Length: 116
Image (cartoon, rainbow, N blue to C red; front, side):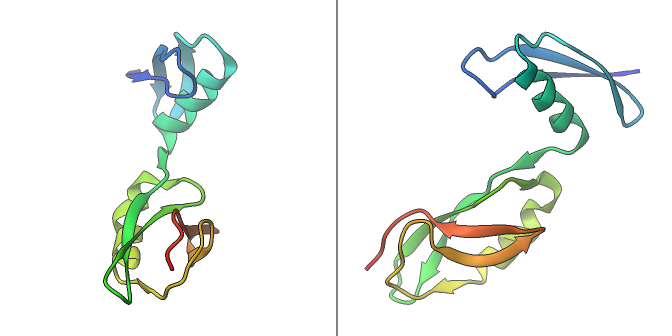
């Protein structure tokens, strides 16, 4: 049986969690103070996901901060970044406006700033 130690990031407590795995199946979670910690640990050891935050070029040479509107599988981060790095955005653009649609399984990349 494999053990994975994590620090939960779901709330300010930062619980030290131990997940025990039998192959690809989580059989036990210890150390979480709330149900959110259990959900976090299960997801993190089976299929970790991350929100991507980065910048894209604009036509006038400025950089626009962007992020994925939902987490994507950590293993797909470099694929997503190749797509994002190939994009040049027209201005003006507003916060929350979609920069790239459906970069991965329904996840969009959105603007994090207003640029005129």
